[in-house]
Length: 189
Image (tube, rainbow, N blue to C red; front, side):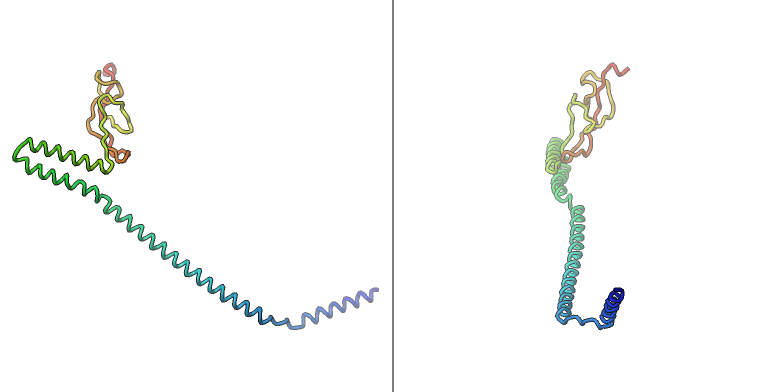
C-alpha cells in the first residue's frame, strides 16, 4: 500500500514539474485588443474629466473676480442715489443764501423748504427720527440719558426734554436721542 501511495505522489510531482516547466499559454489576441480599447477609452475619459476640471476652476476664478468687482462698485457707488437726492437740498441752500440779502422772511421760508426737502430725502432712504415726546417712557435702546433732573412735570424715569434727536436707518439705530430724564423732586436732596 505504501508503494501505491508513493507511486501516486511521484506521478503528481512529475505533473507539477511538467506544468511548471511548460511555457505559459499566450494571451488571446482578442483580450489584448479589448484591453487596448479599454485603455484608450479610459485615457479619453481622463482627458475629458481633466478638461472639465480646468474649465470649472477657470469659471470659479472668473466668478470670484466678478463678485469682487461688483462688491468694489457697490462700495464705490452705493451712495450714488443718496447723493443725487441731496443735491437739490444743496441747491436750495445756495439759493436761500443768495436770497437772504433781500429779506429775512424769504430766508426763513427757504430754510423751512430746504429742511422739508432734506427730511423727505432721508425718509426715501429709510432714515426716520427718534424724537421722544415730553413724559414719554425712557427707552435705553433708543435714548441716551444726558442727565437726570428733578421734575414735577413728568413722571420719574420718563423723558423730560429732548436735547438732540436720534435717527433710525431701517429700524436700526444710527444715533440715539439724547434726553434729560425726570426724577422725583424728593430724590433731589
